[in-house]
Length: 107
Image (cartoon, rainbow, N blue to C red; front, side):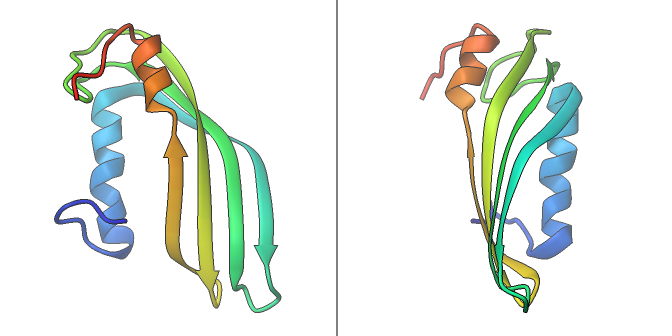
């Protein structure tokens, strides 16, 4: 699902990536497992299990920078048609992020 005003394709991916770089220093994503369910034509499903982490260095979800390190699990599910991603569903454990930076969600 696209965010408000987010463009399709690579152009739409750039602003959120840039935003993450402004909020987290030493940001990294580690992939632990890829489940490849594609057919020979490149269509199908790919699942990714990993984690992301870094140092909270900018405002996020209304929480001012804490300087705390964090590491949270992430899961992504990609639907592909003819080798091209047509939909991505993802799950990130932001509640655990709030716990690790010692903050409380306000909404």
